[in-house]
Amino acid sequence: GWPENVKAQQRNWIGRSEGAEIDFTLADKDGVTPTDRKITVFTTRADTLFGVSFFLLPPESPLAAELVAGTEREAAFKELKEATEKVSSVDRQGSAREKHGVFTGRYVINPINGRPVPIWVADYVLMDYGTGAVMGVPCGDQRDFDFAKKYGLEIAPIICEKDDPLYDELKDERELKVTSVSWDHAMDAEGYLVQSGEFTGLKGGKHSEAVDAIIGWLSERGLGRKKVQFRLRDWLISRQRYWGNPIPMIHCDCCGDVPVPYDQLPVTLPDNLDLGAGETLAEYAPFYETTCPKCGKPAKRITDTMDTFTCSSWYYLRYCDPHNDKLPFSKEAVDRWMPVDNYIGGIEHAILHLLYSRFWTKVLRDLGMIDADEPFTNLLCQGMVKDHNGETMSKSKGNVVPPSSVIGPYGADTMRLVILFIAPPEKDFDWDEKAVAGANRFIKRAWSIVWQLSAGAHAGEFDAKSLKGQAGELFRTLNGLGARCTSDYDRGQFNTAISAVMEIVNAASKYLNETPAADRVPELDFRVAHDIVAILAPICPHWAEELYHEALHLEGSVYNEPWPEFDPELAKADTVEIAVQVMGKVRGHATIAADATREQTEKAALAAISEQLEGKTVRKVIVVPGKLVNVVAN
Image (cartoon, rainbow, N blue to C red):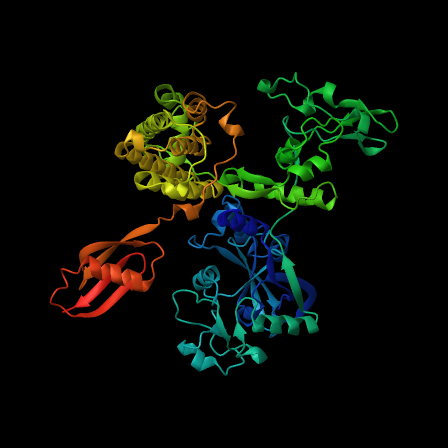
C-alpha cells in the first residue's frame, strides 16, 4: 500500500548491490613488478574485468596522497583535491559535468590478465562507494568513457551485441586486439564477451553467466569473492544542540561513561536557558554538573542530545498507549492497534522518517516488544498547492492563501471540499478561486436537495423491485455510484469519490423535478437523503451534522452511523436501450431485457426497424450484446 516511488527511494538509499570484491595488486615504481600490497575494488560487473584500462581513486583517498607524495605530481594532486572539496558529492557524480583527473605515476596489476593498469585520481569518484577504489571500463560506462577520451586512455571493446560489426571481428579473439574505438559515446554494457580470454563468447550483463564464471575463477585463485554491499551507513544519533532527547549518560574520570540510574529517569531539558543568546547545554553548569552513580565523585552529564528522529520513529506506538506511566507502551495495546491503517505524509520524508520508522519497528519486533512487522500499511504522500505562477506555496515565500480568506466567505467545509476535489490527493495542483466558488455552489445545491428529499419522507423498508420510472433509476444510480464512491474512499481517491456524490445529487434533482409528489416513495426519499449526507460527511462535517439533525431529524451523530451499504447488483437495470443500425447508420432503438439472449436481441432489433427493411433482403445481423445491432441488408 505504498507508492512505488517511495519504495524506490528507500531501495536506492539502502543501496543493496550484488557483486564482487576483486583484488588488484599495486605494482612497484617500475610499473610492472607486483608488490605485496592489495587494492580491492567492488563491482557489480565482474564480466567487464578484461576491459579495465585505468584504475581510479578519489581525491580524498589517503592512498592517492601517499602515491604522489614527494613526486612532481603532488602539486597537481593537491590542486585537484582543493577544487573537489568545493563541489557537492551529487554534482561530482553528474554525467554532464566535465571530469578532472591526475595520473599518479603508479600502476596496479589486473588479476584476470596480468596487465599493468595506470592509477588515476578522478573527481567523479567518491570515497564512500564500495572500497573507495574504482576500475575504469570506458567501453561500457559513459563517465569512464568521457574521462578516457579527455586523457587519451584505452577504450577496449570487450562486450558486444551480435548485430554490432565489431562482434564479427572480435568474436573469436581471446587477447586484446582492439584497444581504441571511434565511438562518440559508451555502449550499453550488454551482449557477449569478446577479447576476454577463456570467457570470450559468454553472455554478459548483470547477474549473467559471464559474471558468475569470472567471479568463480577469481575465487578459486583467492583473487576475488562474491560480495553484497549496502550504501546505507550507521546512523549517528547524537546532536550538539538543545532540542532533542538528552542522552542519559554521565562521564566520570574514574569510572568512565556510566548510565543514569533507572530511578533518575527521565533526564529532562532545563527550561531556563537563554536560547536567544545562543546558550547551550554544554555551557549550563546546573545541567551538566552531577555526581557519578558508581563512585559518588563529581562527574559531568553528557550534553549531547539525540536526533529528533528518535522520537518521530516510534511516536505512533505511544499513541496506542498514551497514558501508560510505567512503560513507553504495553505490548498488548500495540498489538491491538498496530499497524497504522493509513498514514499521510510528505514525500520529503521518504528516506528519513518513513525509513527510520520501519527500521525502528523491526528492531522492536526482533526484541519481542511488538508483533507488527511494518508500521504503516498504506501510505499517501499528498501533493503540494501551487500559486498562479506555478510555485509551491510556502510561508517563507509569502505566497500562501490564508485559510480565513476561504473560510470567512464560504465556510470550512467548502475549503475541505475544494482541496480534495480539485485534484487526486497525491498530485500537485494550482490554486483556483473559481473552483472554490464552484465547490460552494455544489454544497448549497446538495443542501437544498437533501431538504427537498427529506420533506415528508421517513425511514422504512421499501420494495426495490416495485420501483418504476425515475424512482427505479434513482435507486439504481444510488447503488452504483454509492459503491463506486465507497471504493474510491478506500483507495484514497477523494476527488472521484466526490464526483460520484455529485452524480447522485444530479440524479436526485432529476427525480424531484420529473416525479409528481404523489408518485414519490417516502422511504426511498429518506434513504437517498440519508446516504448523501453520510457519504459526504467525511469531507463536509459541519454541513453533514447539521442536516443529520435538522433535515433528517435523527439523534446522536452521523459519525456514529455505520457506513451505508450499496449493492452494485441493484444498479443493474431490468431493461436496456440499444441502438439499431442499417448498414452502419442508426435507424432506430429497441428496449430489451438486460439479460436478453442473442436471438431475443436480434428479434427486437428487426421489429424496431421493420419499416426501413421493407423491400430489402437481410444478409447479415451483427449483435453487440447490450449496446447495438447492425443489420446488413440490400
